[in-house]
Length: 343
Image (cartoon, rainbow, N blue to C red; front, side, top):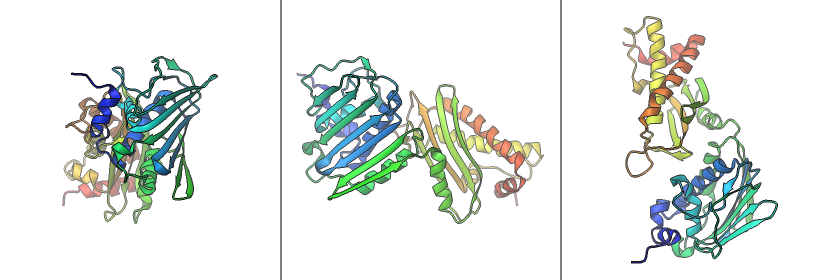
């Protein structure tokens, strides 16, 4: 029996690579693609364009690190997070990849196949351009860009990448619209929106970006002043959302709990208060993005992170951070601990 080529395998079972062949599947693949290419190439500017007939383009600019010439194909050397471009390639009627160097290099594909021999060595280039037309056979004749959905998903994604300038252009329905985003404070800027959505202000607001062991933690959190305002928790791993959270959130919640407990113990208040995770979550605004080379997930989808080794280091960092703040702000401390008081 003849084995399938990589692009034939993707083409035959697209849902295995996209999750679902719809707007969400495309958006998730696009974000994974951008994360990998920008991380690999250290690109500082990304321009995305969406046009009629499901045409699209992605331009990575101001690149300072080399990338592989075979970034658009799938091979045994690919990590799971590096196959997004190859997936999009296989599910596009046509794709063109241009490497801007002293001498321009252009690769042409049709449904992932190329007549050219694609080398694997790395190449230094200042820009990378990817243009494609989605394959109607796969995506369906009724599929068309949903500008509202793409704008929302990509704007949220921009908060996770504070070092990158984004420009997103939609040339749809005889209208051209361009939005530029650069959230230099990252998750802190996103958390501010949730704070402003409430009736009251917040206290103990923090934004931490820390390299710990072999992972990088980016976390922004605060506590709402009024209990009537809802809490908000959103977690990510390598820029991908984890709806059921997992060990990164467990580390943060443990750390916040330990920080309050330190205060109780230092002031001999342990018998007057009973701390709980439910109390910590009440009014908590928190966004977490963790960068891990080898994330482990519980179940067959990436809904919940299951890397136990990250819990204690995260908890220690958060505990010390909150305890230092507690020691400096009596008014905020009283507001925080009142919900743990034993009546």
